[in-house]
Image (cartoon, rainbow, N blue to C red; front, side, top):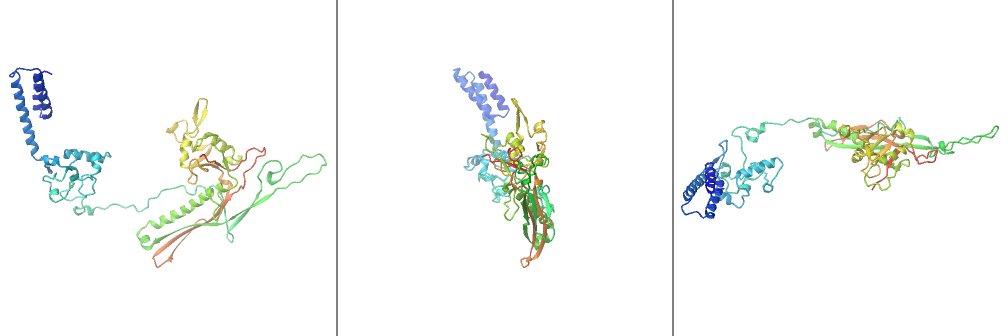
Length: 470
């Protein structure tokens, strides 16, 4: 750019009030004049005029900087001078820069300078201390600063909700009478197992069952077999064998104490207690169907001799479920149970099912997800039988994370369902009422061992799980 062009551009910048741009162009013009080694009087008049205009603009801007600045509402006057900027505690160049970062922080982008300025002062600007941001001298004519407040927030000039004494105390909040609580699928298994009620004058029930562990010749029904015979030949006798399965009522219980005042003052508490405590008992009873030890509680499927643990595949990766596992579990299910069987699995098995594929040539098709892909609902069935998430299943990779069972082959007894009672007498002097719930129940698998088929192949059972994959 030629000298005259630089001078012309600098004048335009001055006219626009851009002192920084004008100074930059002015310095370029001076440098160019020196390089071209102009005569002492050549271009001097233009540069002198430009210098005068630049100095006039600088003086005008300096004067404007000394004058008080007002916001758009005309309510706030802030004085910022060189002493303020020099304050060692001032990490910001100006108040606008500080407010800009406060606005960004409200959107989740918190700058490093704001981290140390977080304030619980009721007058804090967006939760950040102004004095810490701008320095103690940054007060100007702020009334709040003159009263000794180091941070501030605009307050209503009349009545408003933000201040209790200005009317905020008059504004209440609505309260929902009901208690918020989660909904769980409790009672899922109790409605599917074989359940017999126990009548009066009894506390248990005995069952007589065939003692059958094999379908091979001579072992069916515990020993019954047939023979081929010739005319007039003697018939060889055989006989079944039996076993006794006895269930004795076990007691599950839960209780809670509530003060008289709490019951009187909380209308929904009693109904809440009457709902969640029986729910807790049902959860514990259902969990015992799978994990019960048989000592003071029902005998669970996992502890019985009838459960079959399908081994993992050779070189199968830890904490996985593969299609071959599913196929082989299904192959070990007792054939008559296929019509009643259900799949149960933990929540963290879902990703294994949803990404499971059946290899076909060089490609594959999804097993659990329909052909519509993730846009369609999962089948929630495996080999035509429903699959459910159940809390009693173990973590992915552990025994019992996925199970295939026929619940009709699990026998339970109960007496009268869950019983509830309340009393004010147990802690009468303390003014407390006790709510008590009891459930007398017992159960165990109808099968005591897995069954060897007639062809002496792999054993089958109504209860199949997948062995550990560690």
